[in-house]
Length: 107
Image (cartoon, rainbow, N blue to C red; front, side):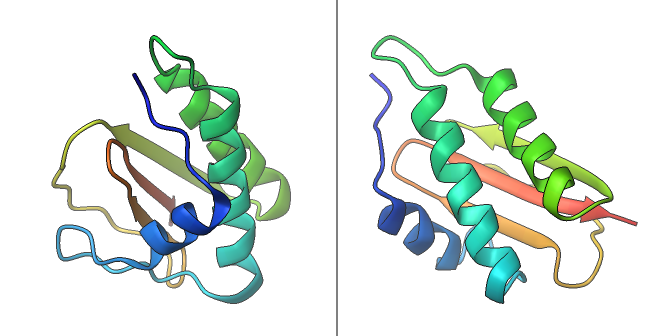
């Protein structure tokens, strides 16, 4: 059963180191991303499963509304490793108990 999270838990997860990659977002953009991720988790999590594609699409599309550009969202149930190139200050990882999210804007 997917866990539901409080906004503060998503914020703490975004501040945590995840696989050696530290969140580079700050200020208003950081807070917007945390709120968007929190809402997407809440909307797309059900007792039996998460709607992974819909959750990532919502996060990406909401970020594009406020911060134009090419945004990418990757979500996993377990630890993941990746190498991505993002624009400066446009990278975030969120590490939660049963959910990992990587959000970034590419060049």
